[in-house]
Image 1 (cartoon, helix red, strand yellow):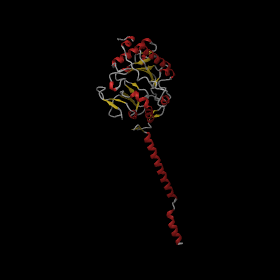
Image 2 (spheres, rainbow, N blue to C red):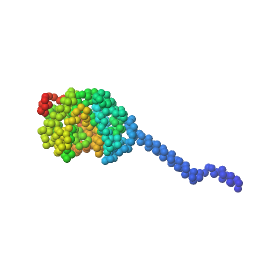
Image 3 (cartoon, rainbow, N blue to C red):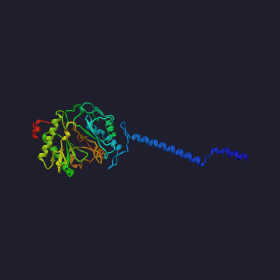
Length: 343
C-alpha cells in the first residue's frame, strides 16, 4: 500500500491538472495573438510607408461623403505620379492643406514653413520678402506633401529657373451654378475657336470642380504684365462679342446665367490647380487633361475622382496632351491688334 502511494506520488508531477492545462492553452493563445498583432502592426506600418515617407494617421477620413482616408489619398498620388509629375516639376506650387479633412479648416501654403515638407525643393529669392517658394519634383516630394495633409496642388505659370517669363496662359472658365454642363462644353469650344483664329494652339482639362481650364503654352519670352494684359484682352473680347454667354468681370452678380472667364490666373504669383490634382471638395474630384475631341463626351468638371482616374489613364491609347511640350508659340502684336489692343 505504501508502494502504491509512492508510485502515485512519482507519477503525479507528469500529469497536468485542468487548471494548468487551461493556463498553458491561454499562454499559447496569447502568444499567437501577440504574434498576429505584431504581424498586423508590421503590415500596417508597411502600408503606411510610401516612397520612404511615413504616413501618420493613415485611417483618418478626409472626405466624409466618400469615406476616403488619408492613406487612400496618398496612395492615389503615388499611383498617378508618373502622369502628374510632368505638370509639377520646376513650377512653384501653392498647396491647399486639410490636416483634419476637407470638412475642417483649409490652409493655403505658397512658401516653405518651419514645419518642413519632406523632399520638396526650396527656391530662395524668387518671391522677395517671403520665405522660399517650393517645387514638387519627385515622387517622394509628392508623397511628402500629401503626408502633410495636402489635398490640392496649384502651380505657377512659370518655372523656377525662368520665373519672370511665363510659359503658359490659363483661362479658367467659371460658370454660374445654374448653368448646365452643355454650356461649359460650348464655352470651352468657343474659347478654343478664338485662340485658333489668333494662331494659338490650346489644351483643355477639367477643373476637378465645376469648370474647365483652357491652357495655352508659350515660349518663355513675354513678361508677366504682357501675358496678363493679353489674357484680359481675350476675356474682354469674348464678353463683348458674346455678352449673353460670357463675363470678364469677377463676382457672382456679374456672371448670372454666364461664364466668367477668369484671366486673373495669369498674375505673377497666381496659380491654377495642376493636372491630376484632387480637389478639397466632397467626392475628391480630380483635374484631368482632355483631348478636344473628348470634350463633348464629358459629364462634368468632377467627372473623375481619386477612385476612377486610374481607369481613365489606363484606358488611354496616348497622352491627350502629348503635343503640349512640343508647342512653340508666342503672343504677337498682330494678335493684340485683332483683339482691339495696342500692338
